[in-house]
Image (cartoon, rainbow, N blue to C red):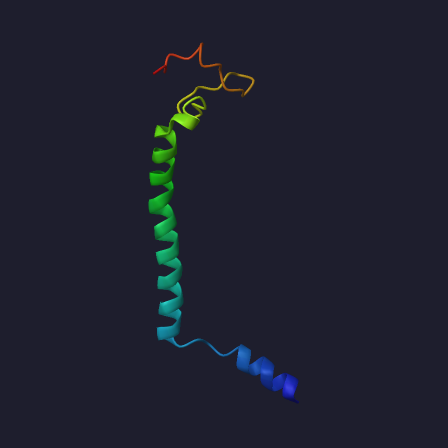
Length: 76
């Protein structure tokens, strides 16, 4: 009997205030990630350590391999 009571308790709808709190928390976390990801990419692309890996802006060959930096026109 207690198993049915636990089941019915877990299937009750959440109150709107609790749902809003959950949704806004998840939206906040997603927004922070969406804002900081491009910022982190920009900062890493400016670092000397990673300047040799110019992955952005390189065209792909028909074999879907990145062209060597000597063949691209996007040199620094």
